[in-house]
Each structure stands twice: as structure tokens, then as C-alpha cells.
Length: 323
Ligand SMILES: [Fe+2]
Image (cartoon, rainbow, N blue to C red; front, side):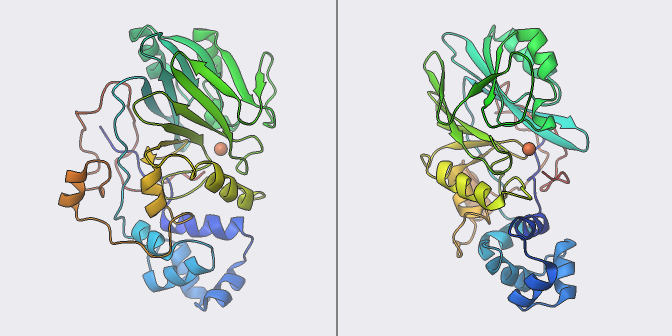
């Protein structure tokens, strides 16, 4: 199965932080004591590591994590869920978007988290597992996350829920408040407020499966965050407060890019990692550890992945799509 590329390159992270914190090129170059030419080269994708490290310090980014990202040394490996969880990755315009299905294997009650752009594969799984979809829960209202809503509604007639602050108008739409809960048999889903990328952007924290799971929309990507031209500080702050305080074995399901883990993001996400990191493990050592290892063979089929944890997309380390 192809690996889903990491959503943002190092230069995307630099540009996103610069834009988010409202720092001009001239200001950033002056503060970091780099030339305008070097700054332009980094933003164009040249991994000038000494320059990158200087820039990081003035953009509230971890220099070590940014360097690891530029050197493509750490690709996240999330553990598999034997039952009750499936990921879908569908193309939307010039990018791909993730959505998820969570269910209690005993009662077969299920919830869909975001719709993706094509519901075909998800509905096949609903049918083959004989699931009853109770709710469609939306992390936020951006088009790529709700594109297949009509298709899913027609097939399931499930309730559709979104945060009360999210700007989406639709008849029959239901609204939840911060920290509301949904239940599917033994599974509890808590609505954690992670605003910034959008006013009611929510992370659905799922307990009751083999590992805790945070389905976070565009609040957090592996090695990056969703963009926000107007509320970026709030975005980083709410993500740090609500997601990085979850149990350390939590698996992260972002709106774009690969599944990851909180442990991986603590180490390798430039927005949240410490300044200095231990060197990434050698591929052989990392493979034996299981959960996390650098990308050694992007695109190789993973025959151990159970049905449902499926993804599509180009087999490259980094994506070209920007959110
Ligand atoms: Fe979004």
C-alpha cells in the first residue's frame, strides 16, 4: 500500500509560521541575520541547513525538528488497529484529504469523522461489516472535509454534527459545544476544541479502541499544522493545550498526510518539538522498534495492514498539497 506523503515540506513550514506570526521577509532576514537571497532560496525549497536553523529560532520552530524534516529522516509509523477503525484518503482537486470510520465491533454502531471527497470505499466497508452509522461528525466545515456529505447522507441517513461556532448552514445540521461526548457502545468520543484553523475546528478524541485516537482535522499534521492567516497563534496554542496533553500513546489522525502518533510529533513536529533532539534511529534499529521509523521504502505494499486502514496517494515522502 502506498504511503501517504507528509503534508508539508520544510519550506512550507517556514512560510506557514512566517505568515501565521505576521513576519515579513525583510524582518525575518534581519532578525535571523541571513541574506535576502538565502531566505528566498530556503523558501523556494533549498535545504540550506545553517540558514534554516537560524530562521527556526525566530519563527518559534524547533531547529532540530526542522532539520530532520528537511533531511527527510523521520516518517511516522502509527500502530494498526485490529478492529473498529478505518482511514480513507481520497483525492480532492489538487490534493488528498483524510476521513475516518470508527465503530464498536460488538454493537456495530459507527460514526464517520469528516466525509472525504469520495464515499465509495467507506460505504463498501460499512456494508461488508454490517455497520449502523449513527453520526457523521465534522471536524470543520472546509469544503474538502464535507465534500461527500450528500452521498453519505443519502446512504446512511445518519445525524450530522458540527461545532456550534463553525460557519456551515444546512437543514437538519446539529450543533455540539466544547467537550461534548458521543457514545457508540463501549466507545466514547469527546469533542475537544482546537480552534484557529477555523472557529469551531474540533478534535474528536476516541477512547475504547486498542489505543486512544485523536481525529484532529486540520489542527495538526505530521510535522506541521493547518494554516490560519488570522488566528495562527490560537491554532498553535489550542493544539498544544488540547492535543499535546493527551496520553502519550495516542494515535493522531490528521485531515491531511499520514497517520502519526503523539510521541512522534513531540519529537519531530517543528512547531512542538524541543530545540534539541536525539539523532533519529538508524533504519534497522527503528524497524525493530516497530512503531516509528524513517521512510525506507515509500510505496512498498504493507500487507500486514488490515482491511479498512487504507490510503491512496503518491508514494513520496512529501506531498505537494498545501492546507
Ligand atoms: Fe481545513
